[in-house]
Image 1 (cartoon, rainbow, N blue to C red):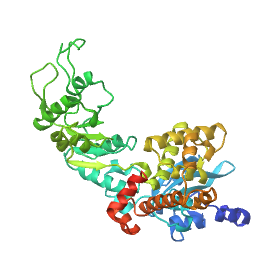
Image 2 (image 1 turned 120 degrees about the horizontal axis):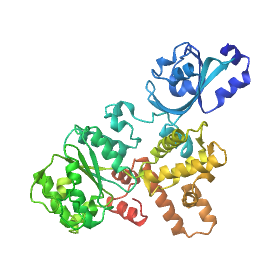
Image 3 (image 1 turned 45 degrees about the vertical axis):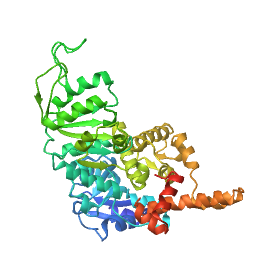
Image 4 (image 1 turned 90 degrees about the horizontal axis):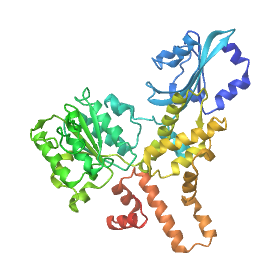
Length: 465
């Protein structure tokens, strides 16, 4: 019945074949009746018609829709046989209130594909969102950390390696890159996962309270202290993991006490003299350059070496631009789930381009806020398409100032000096080459054919991180 309907509606079939989305139609018994070219190209790779949908995706949401007769919107899933992640909406096909089939409309969110589609349309390649063969070996807690950039994958595998030991970990990265989320993944993948993950933000607690917060205190240890005393974070983390965020803000006298606690696995509470033994694993994090602080005698070198057993650097978002799109889709999907929205919201190509061009000083935390802002603005208009105008004004203003090499002709028409034009072209060339070399500076300077000294001088001159 469904096939007959399609055969008699050539206009609808033509539409299905021309649109960017993947289309799959199944009958009430989950047999695949129709697959459009996009689905065939991206997901199936072979003619799957006549086979059951479970052969592609064992836990397919088609089965749920066929059973309930209710649609499912914006479901994000990995097509395991193809190694591609998609966002799919499923709709029942009904005849006189009976579900006779279902249609799935999906869009791949392959970062490479979308990145090239928007910024490098001549270089479109089909590539899975994740390198599934290599990522499949990661612990479950790391699988939910989204990204395919080489430097980020390196951090993931190093984190997974650290999780298999009790070694202390030092996580480095700008504010907003997700250091605490990363630390939780290490904890959950470790042998300590059944014990507590205790968080202390060394920058958020007043210095006069930080010692008692970390080490606890005995009854009556100071004015205002509880008569029962209080356990500190180190005690609470016994057999688990202690996460020390912003460790660079830890005062010098507490650096010494923490060092002793790490060395001897024991400490005294404030106002006490009875050693308390603990078995903890420490993960510290900072957005500061701890080694520079060591050289400036602002951070104890012995504590630095104790914490820096497994250093892991999480790259900023501006250095992993291909991860922006899948992250944005993830945040949008979460919003749709929490708001229980029955519309399939999409980012327009122009909006995605703006987000790709922006430098994201607030990193992933800022991206999440921007997606929520854009969602609220588009929702207020009843518009399921997130457009450029829905993005925050400051982001649009910032990206409008980014000049690409194609704009150099316009610069000449503006009567810019020759040195200005050359400098602009040089800066953009270095940035683009760095991007093509996955931020590998050694490869970049070789490709550019300049000396190491000249290369780093230019990085400093143009403030390229």
